[in-house]
Length: 338
Ligand SMILES: NC(=O)C[C@H](N)C(=O)O
Image (cartoon, rainbow, N blue to C red; front, side):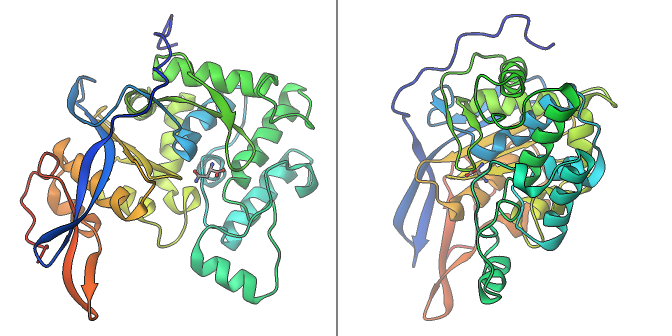
């Protein structure tokens, strides 16, 4: 246990976000992305904060590594690709569907036991092909199916009921809440329902960074280390081909990173340095460059991060600007912006 008595829950208040990235077109600030950012040093001290890192927020799928740790602690006997898929917001590629099916099979169950909401594949290319083939939204294709299959497997192994595994009072979800509080070191502020149907726990951005650093710094062989290893070694199973989060994990040695809907990203290094980002309006185009800039502030070599600096803004098909993290985040003045 990390936190013998977790601190109070984060405050539920309107978050006071700050500018985190500028949209520059032709040398003028055309737009401003607001958000919050925390950078933790290896000693877990806050090295940089922007916006509101202590307010209650929803980490969405950036919570999945914590949920996976809870399942492994409850006896989930997975590693490698299938454990990575357990913590995935997957793209809906065939390998992801096959992996979710395999987890269900190991539990002696079928797709019919899943209670996540049917959806089309998350990745636009995979989704377009899916629709062209006339396929319908499905529970297996939904980006959280690995997590749900693993939740069912964990219930089977513990003799817990299957029909109501998404109820926040179910022993599985109680176990998840306990691990979330242990790893973040704070009480959960609110419990609501995530898009997929699973309980969604509200913590602070600071708590998310701290929890993820605890996962990457855990002793080898522990549930935390098993989840970190699986996700790092099988980054495409935790996301998909061509996903920025997988590319980021490959680019930065030892990095564990997880994205969540509505502009959330967390990333932690093996020595405990960690960053967490929330873009106020959920904009993906700001999430990646802001995460990269925060990692540079945490001491990651900026040369490893150049491909995440942000897509150029086009005018007449030519680059005329870019999304640029604010100066407080950007250690190297960018030359990419026109
Ligand atoms: N990637 C995500 O954040 C997905 C989220 N867990 C949902 O169910 O909507």
